[in-house]
Length: 473
Image (cartoon, rainbow, N blue to C red; front, side, top):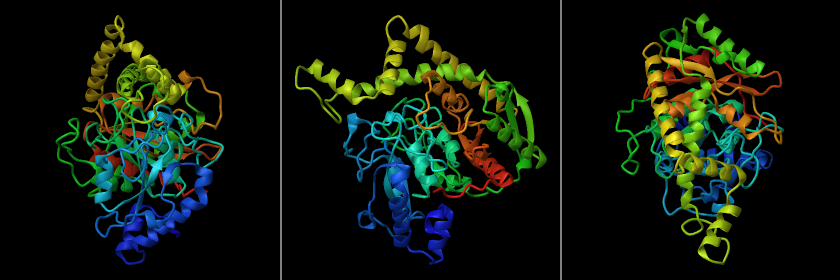
């Protein structure tokens, strides 16, 4: 097996047995980047050779390259959020998640392409380039963590960090045949993550299998004094006792969700996964949840409202590019007009409208009340079942350049946004393939801080589905 084909635990085991050195591991992945990155276009900045890598002699991940989404503060690479407005900007500090990876010995392999400021579902909204899906280069890897998904699927790194505001880890994981974990809101520090929607954002890993996701969560989870929203709870060893029989779990299928407008191959793969759970002794029951489009509607009020507030700081004065040499108002307008792309402008306008005088009570405050009701309904369902099972996305990966109405694109988040609205942990794992050979994902959602059991159930499902998802290209 080539180095780039090995997952995280295989690399650690080979290094512990003396079969590979840290230097050989980093050289193996840099060679892979040099061979395939021109096709994948997953990195906006990266290590070009091993002389730029700081290889430590301590930590489980020593010498293992991990990619980081371009909206997390790093000292080694610029943090541009794939936006022309922040092009070349380097933060004066490092985010907690990145710092934890380095303390575990990881080598930061580079920053990955994304939809600008994490707004989008395809990476087509990047200010720099469009990443490609390694399973089929004519298709997209998803978004907004599309670059992170693409570089893991292509074997350029064994794991990457993404951020998930409405499904931005899970959707690209599903499109690219990977495992994507969104932890409970507050499980992983967001210090150093450029905020999109502060009450929804969460950092999580993209990996080749569930056990690697558990390994990454062991490193990332924990209270952080630099992030007041990080939770002060005990985090167990997520890898310990991960081998559990699926018969010990009770899954809920939301009534009517599989009757929505789904691609037939997605519906078939998810129904097959449900049947395999039943055949192997797992219990599956129908549960009542709010209509899927209700959470989506709430999300598209709350997220743009918070985005319009968070992005007000990018005005040409404090961060990144400054355009125009006239008066200050002209400078603000020129910087923001030419620095932001169309999707970011669209969401700022939607959010500003939702927060404007006369509409704040009718839209934003009402959305917050409905959010509380939805959260209560999910809590009630988790009294009946351990997990909710749904498709991750209604379709396989989009084709590059395909004409899509923005509203049509927003609807692709319909199964992922509830976990962000409720703050729940959720995981996407491969469920099979479409007739065109594109990956399809299935999603499990758990109650708050149930990651240990969620990873056990996902590992069980991964074992019984036994999907072969080799490195692509």
